Image 1 (cartoon, rainbow, N blue to C red):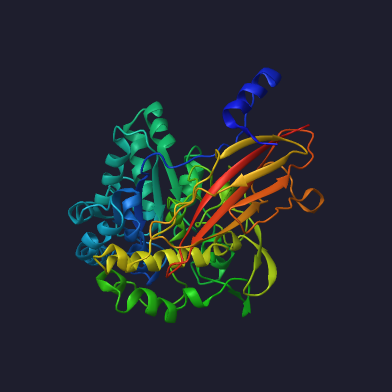
Image 2: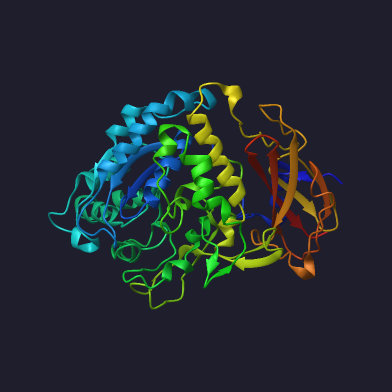
Length: 481
């Protein structure tokens, strides 16, 4: 039986129930996200690493600010000079990048939005007389007549954001401030000063993604945070699932840094973990998997759920309201041939794809000929992204319309993302996908006594070098028979 499309879905259910709140509708990129970065660059190498990767994807976003800030590891100075160095390298390769994809920002634009935050730690840099070039610029960005959300990424401390909010609370009416807060989407990985908890508890309406916690004395709390799944996989000397070799220095030297042009050369040697701040923007990569307004959907940047986390001793203070924070995925690892369940796995499950994608974009920056590099496939469904079926129906999902711009052969994998959605598809109500490694699959819709949703991910990978992957997400709404 063919699934019912979304339009028919609403025509069928509205007369029956009077209303229906799905809460899980698919969302896609219809316009570029607005992005604003706060970085404690030069506290260690990982911010510079993340900025290199960030610029290779800069055609996907409207970048409105890059501000040098402090953090717990860099308390009384900023390093905007390092941002300028990396953007200067970008200026040398932008023309090459444009050969492979359009929309990269001009060098002049990026230089104009590099700003400096207050050179003070945390809340000592918030209050009367603590305005900075960075906080004033952030206010201007938030005041723009633009309804799109502003994705504010704090790679270090968040006191530039805190100061902007502190000032706006004193200079704007409550309704004006609330309208601005509605546009804010904040992702701060972990807390790297005391301003993040102050923001969350003082302005409870802010959309906030964070693994709350603080490592002032090197106590090791960061290994609990979701972001460490970007490149970490060891805990007390044990391998926890993913392949570490593709995030380690030898691989990065070969595929990113050496003989890969001026921008790749700015990616420094890893001292601790590679690119701890990168998850803050991987969820904005327009790859068919990401849904930025729904952190619980899962993306290259990880998966997060909305709740009040339990207070831990490494947190500044208890959380007073729900925040988007750590969630777990159960993932089978080819590397260990075991199943692993952790918040880190919500990121590392995609590791090969995001590392290969970065390597390809660095290749783009180093060649002016389209045919000398690989380009991602186009994952395309033969039906809509949201379907309605009834319990017991045989459902067919198809990505047969997928193509590749380089003419490469394509391989397919369908994944039932069991942690996402409202329908329990655990052991008692499992989904068996027939022919999961082909462009089209079928399954029997599980039995349910109420409307529920299941997320399926189509993963399409080309045969180029490096192999590249794109996705389509299908949300299947199941109703009782």
